[in-house]
Length: 136
Ligand SMILES: CC(C)(COP(=O)(O)OP(=O)(O)OC[C@H]1O[C@@H](n2cnc3c(N)ncnc32)[C@H](O)[C@@H]1OP(=O)(O)O)[C@@H](O)C(=O)NCCC(=O)NCCS
Image 1 (cartoon, rainbow, N blue to C red):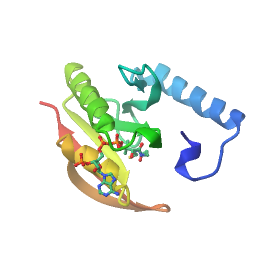
Image 2: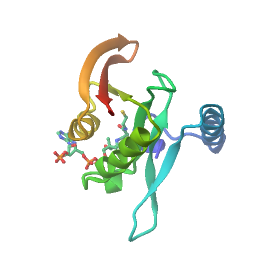
Image 3: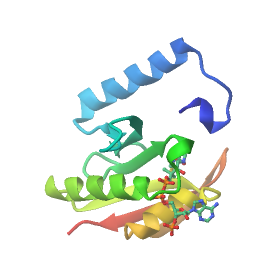
């Protein structure tokens, strides 16, 4: 999946480092990226969940990524909708998302879930759109 991002193919070592970093972040924060699988096929198709990311543990970021072969069937929206409801059930009042301005598919997923644009920041990789959604 990481190789599909178009930044080259990572080595097995790179992937192990990345996964162990994600697992330590989960152990530290208590929030996680969860595996997404299709009910009928039972296959792993990506991840969706909450991360501290650029935000905070109380108002974390939603994050998701799916294999290209399953894009365009509403699956990210379905998975992210479940995560939004689960986040509300923890008593959290707000979620954030940060998305590159060119990422129309991700912005559309967030729009369908009721996120609204808060502001746009600029870093060395270009424009980053901050979106937010109240959970109350
Ligand atoms: C973002 C991502 C998870 C969306 O997954 P998905 O399962 O295809 O999303 P959904 O099918 O639920 O919704 C996608 C929406 O974007 C729309 N869309 C997709 N590409 C589009 C484009 N180039 N222009 C306009 N709309 C587009 C789809 O039509 C759909 O909207 P609709 O339901 O109104 O038709 C997927 O593209 C992905 O994994 N991208 C790489 C990782 C990534 O960018 N993650 C987010 C980082 S912030």
